[in-house]
Image (cartoon, rainbow, N blue to C red; front, top):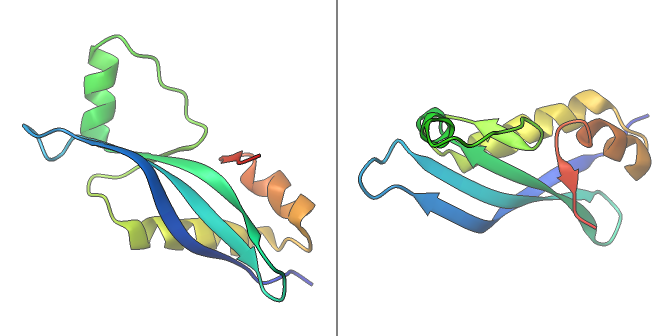
Length: 111
């Protein structure tokens, strides 16, 4: 039986918004995950980037890799949390190790 893991919140650790173009943004956050009945929790790093920011970065010669990146046109924290929760629920993890195996495919766990 899977454990009730839950995304509690996103805590922004860095954000960049283009003052000339509101469609360009990059937000780095920690997604804090808990398990019912257990003290504390764990977190993964999530980088949210708009397609316009990605295009601007690529035009400037940057190379972007996909792990840990979430792309969206408009920053919507509730949508990010729902998406992460869907991944967690779909994992049907029975313990932290199993959850880390699944989420580790997408995101970097904080040490």
